[in-house]
Image 1: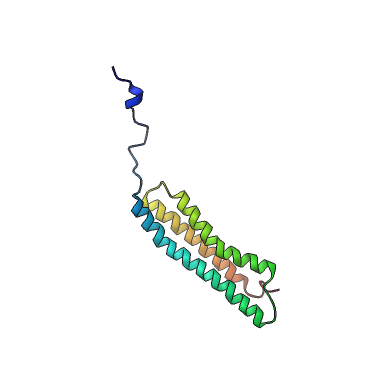
Image 2: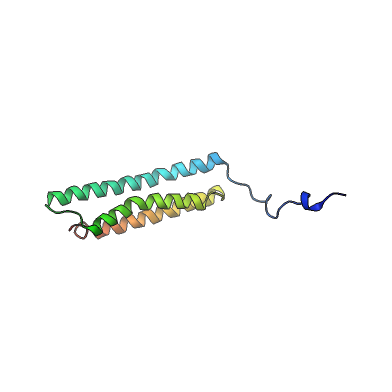
Length: 122
């Protein structure tokens, strides 16, 4: 007689297969390039507005620095969060999570852009 508890398979374990690591990495790298561009854009905003403020004999306000730092750190945090949430999902849901995160990052960048330089300067 065999013990049925050792031969039984867990419920749902055979019905879903994990995404191969190479495919998950490829998806993350492709979307990571877009996120890296958002970070590069945010760094450019910080440097450009700082140069603009200096040319106007002014400086960035505390609010302006915080907003611009959120613009830099936002895409990084969103990318890590999307990668963490999608780590056990299939390739399509992983790509959808990265795309949704990219849309959120773009919305944050547009909101920062609409604030304008006047509200970020002291």
